[in-house]
Amino acid sequence: MRLLTVLTLLSAFPPSLEAAQAQGATSVRDLRDQAVAHYRERRYFQAIQAAEKALGAAPEAERGELKTLLARFRSALGVELFNAGETRKAEESFRGALEASDDSYARFGLGFLHFVRLDDAKAAEHLEQAARLDPAYAKTHKLLGLVDYRQGRTASALARMVEACRLDPKDREAKALLDRWQLEGKHTGAFREEKLGRFAVRWDPDLAREAVEQAARELEAARKELEASGLAARPVPVVLFTERRFHEATGSFHWVGGVFDGQVKLPLGGARLEGAPLEELRSSLRHELVHVAVREVSPECPNWLNEGIAQHFDRARGADELRRALREGASRRLAFRDVPLRLWEVDDEALSRWTYVQGHGFVEFLVQRFQEFRLRLLLRALAREGSVARAFEGTYGAALDDLEAQWWKEVLGG
Image (cartoon, rainbow, N blue to C red; front, side, top):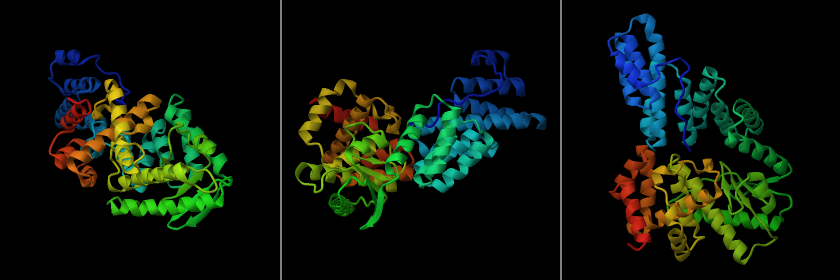
């Protein structure tokens, strides 16, 4: 998911960089205009340099406006760095913005980073300040709603999402979340809840008790299996639905076999699961618990990689089937740097399914070439470095683009 689009300033500024340069940077006002022109053309480093130079020469009466502009320029650079996978540098840029002025976008950026890292208390702190500074920015209310939802504050989450939709009626993601939460509330209001083993389980009253208890046993078995592989998943709330209610309540594509959004949500059927349905359940449990474990180790892990690792461990797709799917879809391949970091922003079903296949294939390549244990090292490097590029180079000794090229050459038999 891209953190923000390019930010918009509200004042009237020169129409182009050339117009500002033509004036010659001979005064604080010229430097200020050049900085804004650089910003408008997304030259954020140059905008920051010009603003800093102007600030150094400005009289006290003009410093307030320049500090506000400098904070906005640094926030825009932070957005660009985040979208490039450089989350550590993005954080530095957002914090640098706040040193100049209390900028709402910098607060939002820091709130988003803490949200991704599962630090909801710090996320809410920055987001509440962002909302005070700019109450009309819909994305702040949306993200606060997501924080509330993850913490189980459903009523507050719904109220915030209603406000987000009111402020930005064109935000399809916010509208989809609001619809899903309202629908989910209708379905889960009568669900039963009980602690089964280490997990708090809620389940659809139409499900047989025997199937629910069997699912809980399989859940614990999957947790132990992954723990033995070095991916320890903490017990999280689990919600079990009938097949029909699962897709209605989660709004997921028909081929999705589970959802993790702070809670593990799964469809379940039958009084006693046997044969293929049982294997499907085991695969779904492993898949969703891997997501839990990956988020624990590396909250900022790109979703294409997270999904690839989950599919590696769920063992639902065989090697021959995977290779065939990759070859058939090779003409649609995307560089991983161009895949949205957060796949929930992808609303094209075909693209969504393809990113799952591509992520899975690449992870299998990494495992075969470099061994499975390096996946854990990669996740730790992502958490430590805050950079997708540096994490891959440090773990595999090669750039992500180079590894990608090697993988596709192997897939296509070149």
